[in-house]
Amino acid sequence: MDFRHEWKIEINTADLLALRSRLRVLMEPDAHAVDGRYQIRSLYFDSPTDRALREKIDGVNRREKFRIRYYNGDTGFLSLEKKSKLNGLCKKQTVQITTGQAQTIAAGSIPQIQQNAPQLLQELCYKMKTEGLQPKVVVDYIREPFIYRPGNVRVTFDYGIRTGLRCTDFLNADLVTVPAGDAPVLMEVKWDAFLPDLIRDAVQMTGRRASAFSKYAQCRIYG
Figure (cartoon, rainbow, N blue to C red):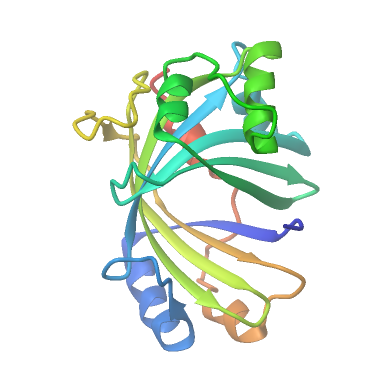
């Protein structure tokens, strides 16, 4: 996948209600959503010096972060993801991993993998060994996704952001999480080469501008 454009815009509940009504007329729902939304749980990784967190806060132009993610409580389908940023553009690489691999990695250990294992899994294992990447925090939230096929546009609303504090037992359905401070509703707008005017106009809200909000950084407020 090539790099994509991305806006992150902090909004409030009133904005969400207005934008949701607009986009339901213009865009398609995500086929994987249940009643228009789904629950996301991610386990994020960082170095012993919190390099990913520090680079995010400092606005470093080129950066990356790893996470393992699953949806709607389904631990039977686990995705290892690497999100890269360059010159304000973003790219996400994804591979599926096994439950056993995820359990080993979440415990801070490097799983035994074959030479033909997915390249992204090999990269994570290599960086766990050479850079000390370790699981840092669990991030939970609800997402409402909308799709507009021209321009491959995706608009999502993320809210109810919660953190597992220092616990990384993210496969545990009974994991206790707490609200991640006073986190806003976050609207993300992503597209390829062009953003159709129809959608550009629809997502505009008076007094709202693109921000650098990070769910990972927000969930690290407790440590």
